[in-house]
Amino acid sequence: MENEIENADPEFYTVGDLFTADKEIVDSLKLEYSSATPFEENLVRDTFNIVRDEMLNKYGDYIPDDARERLLSNKDNINGTNHVLILSEEDYQSFNDEWLPKLQQLNKQEQLPPLQPGGMWLRMGQVIVVCDMTEVAKRNWESSKKYFENYGQIDEEAMINFIKNSTVTALLTHETIHSCQGSIEHMDRGRDMYIRVALDECGVHYLCDEILKTKFPRMVSAPQQFDKERIEKFQDILKKYGDDAYGVLFQNVPKGVAEKEHYESLKKKIYSEFTEEDIVRLGIADRLTSKFFENAS
Ligand SMILES: [Zn+2]
Image 1 (cartoon, rainbow, N blue to C red):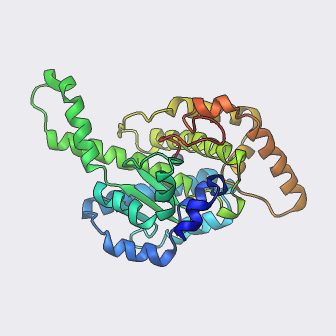
Image 2: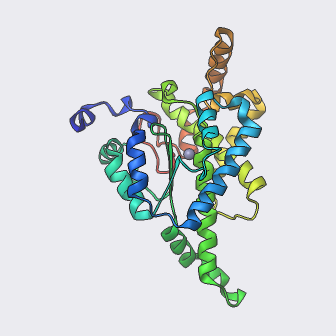
Image 3: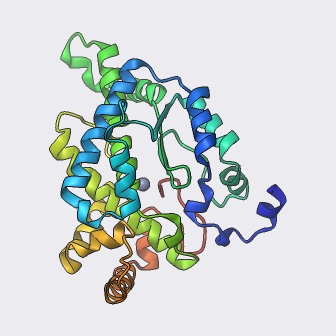
């Protein structure tokens, strides 16, 4: 298997292909890496439920059937989080090293940047993996506490928890929106793969911003790099092509011939909105058919 990867043309692999984990593996992972505290379990469940309901209520018409069923199948689940793994920074790293060997192989070939603590949506296995961000929150507090010197006594532990919870909420919201996207059979190849990642990130950043503003107004997470550019890009696409652009974002390919034709032609138009310059400006890759940036996902 590994030789096959080493010898393969990296372009052959799509982003979806890289994140390979089947359901049985994921179930065993949940047992093995069950480091979440009851508080984290609650945070994940509550956040996931809010984002899921918002996605179904507002954008349900544009979400593909398989993704909608996936979201709904979690609805009656007592935890609501069958599809979410929350891992410590250390476990997040070993998850990457041990369970995503293809991704690791490509990292070594410098096709993808090294893993940063954050979140990911595994299309195969249909799992959202989020780092618990405890260590990141501590580091962020250390580097920013000088700005709070004049505010008198500050409860550092409460501040660190606030940063951690805000960051996990933002990550989980982002990845839950990704999980509304269609299945791997519709993945693009080659040049279009870069454009697809750019469209994914612009659309997901836009929707994440909308949901965080309305549903989690008291959370203050550090602005993500390229956030503004990506949100604006998707706003422009919505202005130009209307709400059908959500269907293309979620890869909701219709079955009817005429509808499918409309979808394909809209997709072509939307893809043509992304120039090579945009791909670089939006922090996706250093150039088309070259390597992905750290912030791509
Ligand atoms: Zn993303």
